[in-house]
Length: 121
Image (cartoon, rainbow, N blue to C red):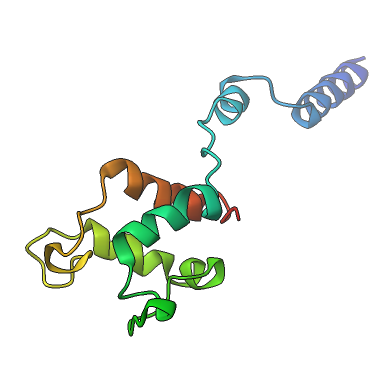
C-alpha cells in the first residue's frame, strides 16, 4: 500500500518540476527593465556628426577612424564609449581638447543602449 502512494508523490513532484514557473523568479525576469529602442539614424548619427566631425569623417577630410557610417560606428562603439567616459583631463578623452562639447550623460546612455539593444539601424 505504501508503494502506490510513494509513486503518486514522485509523479506529482515531477509534474510540478516540469510546470512553468510562476514564482518570484519568473516574475523578476518578466519585470526586468527593457532596453529602450535606439536607432543609428535617429539617435546615434546626430551625436556623432555633432561631436566627432570632422576628425572621424573622411568625407570632411577627417583622418581618424571613420564613424561616418552605421557599420563603422558599430565597429568602434566600445572604444567610443570608453573615450567619452574618461575624465576630461585625460589626454585620451573625446571630443578632443574641448574642440566640441563633451557628450551628456543622456547621449552616453544612448550609445550604451544602442550597443546593448542590438545596434538598431
